[in-house]
Image 1 (spheres, rainbow, N blue to C red):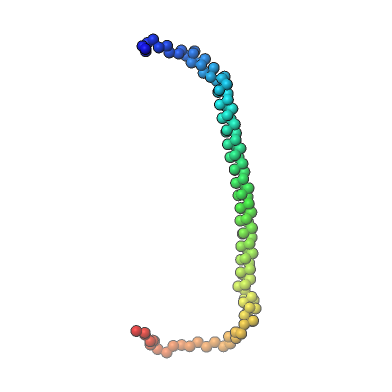
Image 2 (tube, rainbow, N blue to C red):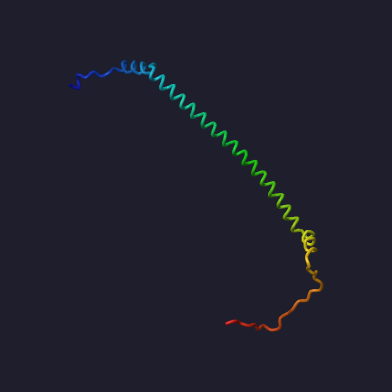
Length: 115
């Protein structure tokens, strides 16, 4: 077939074809399906984000609780390191208190060497 004999659609015919396609049942049904799919995906995403918000809130509460526990343990460690606590725990042992201390000074600088 000759290319010159082939009828090309005019601009008006193209515009009418697009308008006919936009009001067709196929286009409307595809548009409805797309809206439903995107709506379901949107709800799924919102649900996921809100669930993660609750998880983050629970984790923040857990961090706060652990910080309080850490402070309590720091106070307990400090109380065990105090002199009163150490003396109280030492009184139950058979240790003798130090009286007068005498220091030994070495005479000379000789020492033994192992081969």
